Length: 128
Image (cartoon, rainbow, N blue to C red; front, top):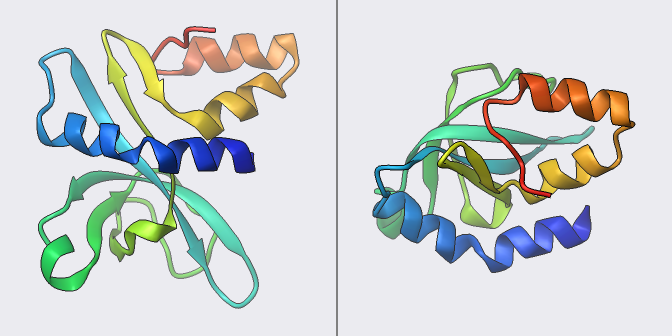
């Protein structure tokens, strides 16, 4: 998983360029962000990204895109985070996942049955 996070961080400029200049066949831009408190940490997908606060405050804003387990955070909550907390990125291009490095690791650890269920419910296809 650490290699996946490292790969996502190394390629974040590709994501940012694609996000700022999306092609018509690119949708669903998300960042995965690590949130921490005294007891735990959680990696959460964030949508509706806004980089306009980056120059002035050094932060990015977005909306939590999945149901978090961490207290104090909620689905669809608007949040602010430092770019150093990004652990993955993804978007969909022509129906296929681009990025999603941690998702690919999780999927690779699934049984064939789990992978089939995941693939049939995912809003994108994954090139193996």
